[in-house]
Amino acid sequence: MRWIIPASITLIVLLLFPANSYNDPDTFWHIENGLYMIEHKSVLHHAIHTFYGNNLPYIPHEYGFEFIEAALYRTFGWPGTYLLTAVSFGLLMTGLYRLMKVSRQEIGFQNIPFICTLLLVPVGLWIYYCYFTSRPQIISAFLIVWYFIWMRQFKMTDQLRYVIAMMFGSCAIANIHAGVWPVIAVFSGMQIAETLWEKSLRWRHMLLYGAVALAGMLNPGGYRSITYVLVVTQHHYNRLINEWKPIDFLDWENIPIVLILIFFAYILPFSLHKKVFRILLMLGIIYLGVTNIKQNLFLWLFVPYFATTETPYAYGLRSLSKLRLPFRPATAALGLAAGLAINAVLVFANPPQVNAKQYPVDEMNYILAHTDSGARPKVISTYGTSGYAMYRGADVLCDGRQDPFITEASKGVFGWNAFERSMYGFSDKLPQIVKADQPDYLITPNTSSSRLQEQWETAFGKPIYSGRYGKVFDTRSSL
View (tube, rainbow, N blue to C red):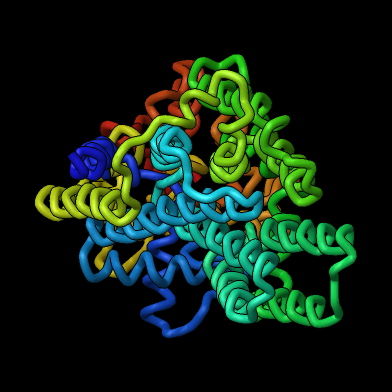
């Protein structure tokens, strides 16, 4: 009987198909950045493989993730990136369980009701399928959760070991995914405000919190890595990217987000317990949870923190909180590990392939077959596929990093910087952009309208190759 739950967890984890963790547009240029840094044994402070050479400055705000990802990729190929995904997901799920335990300890409760533990299933499924592509957030998600755990344990115990753990978390987040470091700074500020309210703040505490903040500054980009979010939000450039756009709550694909918001709103009156910290955290999580898809992740991460203390009080959940099953954290963790391990074996036995309809796999094969060995052709492709073209060996107009490509140095035709040309360029403006930037090849997607395709063929001639993703134009002859 005691093995039913871990066996069930293993089966659920086997539904987390590894293929979902691949084919993210950013993965390709993250890997290429990491491979470049490993080869040159240095941290990147400039853009690489672009039309501009090494002249555009770059803030290394995710360099740690890129080192790790590239090292695994170089050693094991694509299966290596899944190993990172599996380990990160395992650490996140164990962290969410520990988070629920800490939440109950704050209120004076003991064991976690099984119904609360069961909440981790839909939360884990949603996080995996929506956020666990091979990007820095797979590491920063569990680091943020564990930082929060250590921070609250410090509040309850005043033990120095938790401050040391917080310093490690602060430094790790700043070097892995610095753009989310302000989140832990805000969490710490909420805890300081709580301590002030309780009139228990000491100078010793402020010095320790200061040490935690300084640990975050120990990264190659310094404070600029920490404030990187201000770069991507200037001129609302971030809203040109789907994950930064406001959430469409009427879209059926976002039904789970609507349901979790309704659930969150329902449990709040029963889970705040008149605690200042919980009220402040609730306000912050609501703000992040409704802002955009990218930041909605924080709602899913912290709903378990609130939900685990409301079951004795919330109407309709009181009886469910009395449900008892032979749940043991150790055997549940074993079931989680077994499922992830089996998936890893399957990935090594059958490595994933890049989606050739979503990325210009065939098209880059053709271009590279007609390019001298060792040369990097200049290729203009869409913003979402430029990272793949760069990863395959091309120099591109703009990849997924924003900060180098919104500079004055990258400005060109129409007064647009490289990021703007990449985002707006696949329109009737494309002939002028190609004429100004002078690529060797142009890759256009099959999803483009027939009117635009005709216009481009008038400007560039007939495509020299058609693949599963799109068409290749040799633009050298039309310049």
